[in-house]
Image (cartoon, helix red, strand yellow):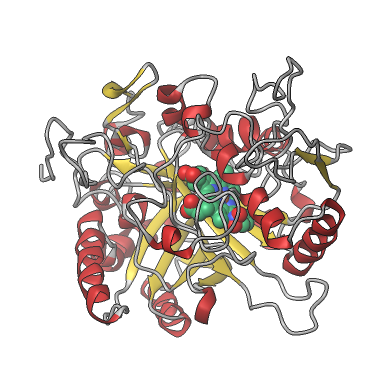
Length: 489
Ligand code: N7H
């Protein structure tokens, strides 16, 4: 077994875990190829013969990351045209490979993203409103990452050719980083990819003696079993000591991970118009209102550290841009309780406690899709949004918990009181990704600031949804040796 050991931390099988899971494939463009297996026997042979050797491991992704960081120090842009290739299977795909009596995996995975029970639990739009291709059976997905759309398109065709008619392409979509000054931003114009959990055994502490439990300042180190099967998980009572290793459904499941995929369409002109009108009504700037909905400014500077105005220097400083909690803002003066980042990662504000909050973390690896807003596009004409991807060891306790118990739950975070009173606060929905149950209108508390103090009550009603689910899937990302042996023999 090979691995990277750090203090008492677990050694990770870097050659076994697929590269997108913990590190992320290097991607300026990424093709998602959703397919159905049409000839299982030949598919297995061809995967073994032609595909497995091309799959990107965590070790490769890590090496590339280090090279890219070195190069960025010189002239800002990586020079290599790296192909990143990963492969995952749905529950149907796993059954194709291993037969109907196969071992059962995570409960939510087995149910599937498109099951009526899942849709109801997450307040997702009914399947008839999804991309029509998702009404067909989907067995798996290839993630093909590279420097530009032409490159990933070329390699997508090559992988399909190498599988020589043993798969049928069901749906494909290319994601791409946004151009020019919007590079690194999602379509509403906010910097993305700042806050990710650190991984014990992989992420180095930037201050090993002062803060051994953090990677970069503010980045909690999480036990790898939260994201990869077969390792110690978080202990919900103590963030430092490991929790149990979850029992494996089968020996080959070790080093596998669950990927949640969601194609989230963003209504950008509609979002801008709504924010402008509501900001005017509340007597604040559009930028301030949008930032209070997100919890960070467009540059990425966190509201908690920069409550009045954007601060690009703070945003670019990796030692400061994620180093905060919410305990110092108990009355939501700086950042509303409902702000997207405060909802989805409550940090030290979670009533369950900080250690328990760390059992609901995810590793995000999405990419924007679709064209830029065209001049004069006052209503969304062309589809654009986020190919949202996240990894975890339990879909139920991680992604689904965040979506259902935090983002869609107006009562979360609970236990808050109005300043100087005992009146309880209902924070409202996550204004970015929160989804109300049918017939209910989304709202959030305190869109207008009371910074540094004050008692002006304000509320925002959001009859429109600015982020709309248009397709979803749950995938198992097996280890490379599971793909080489148990799943393809
Ligand atoms: Fe979110 N946005 O632009 O508003 N997200 N997100 N997300 N998100 C984050 O910290 C956004 C979505 C998380 O640790 C930032 O990297 C948009 C889903 C988590 O403080 C911004 C969409 C889920 C974090 C956005 C979307 C999450 C996070 C700040 C959909 C899970 C880290 C940049 C179109 C259910 C929070 C950063 C932390 C950050 C936006 C989707 C979760 C700007 C537009 C579906 C855990």
